[in-house]
Amino acid sequence: MTKKTWSSILTDSYYAVFSIKRGFFTSKWLSITEEKNMKYEIEIIPSKQEHQDEVLQIFNDGFSSKFQFVTQNKDQQLSFARDFALFHHESQNLNFVAVLNGHVAGFLLLKLPIKHKSKSKKGLSNHELLRKYGLLGIVKTILLGATFYHKIKEGEAYIDTLGVAPKYRGKGVGTQLINFAESIARQKGLSRLSLLVIYENPKAQKLYESCGFQVKSSHSHWWMKRSTGISGSYYMEKEI
Image (cartoon, rainbow, N blue to C red; front, side, top):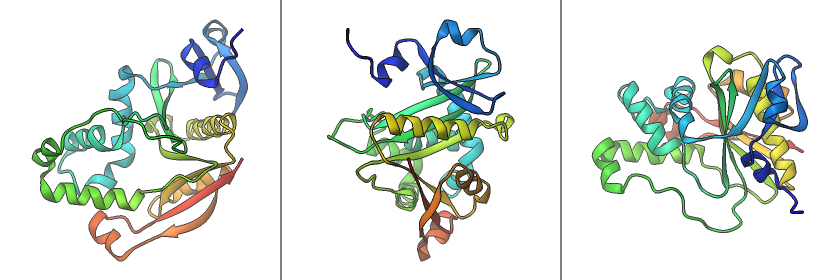
């Protein structure tokens, strides 16, 4: 009998189930039938095309301030998220959503060390991006990318993006997504979980610290505040 990997379990109609009511995640894998008999549960499952609109809305609600210097209105912010920030499906990128009552309560983009080069999902061409955002917008996007760039080290899993819908904030969804990321990292044999958090987001930093993350370094350059509106960021790690 072939041994199932964590990815095959997820894709073969199994869910990693986390409990809001009990406030901790179960390390047990539960089938759909078992899960339906439970109440007040969050399902953390691989992101699908059908989740994209809700994920984009959560992303825009939580991160639009980071992109205001590039975009001019809400529609452009959603378009920017779709073109640049989300849904880049490379082999080392794992996209998950936390689903509650049929709606996306939060999402997670987890990056693993690159073992081999792979082709990402084709996006807009350079000409299309230039036409859509203009030369200045492209330059600003490059600066923004430099602000948040992190080269993943060996033995490290990196939380690239984590967002929670406004109505589900303060209910433990973010913590459970972090716990889920940690469980995935452990299963992959990795020893550290890391992330970046901007200076302007002390609430998120407090959440990460409560989950065991520690500030290892800070990143700030003279051009960051002027070009992106962001003063700098902390690099945080958790040994797992």
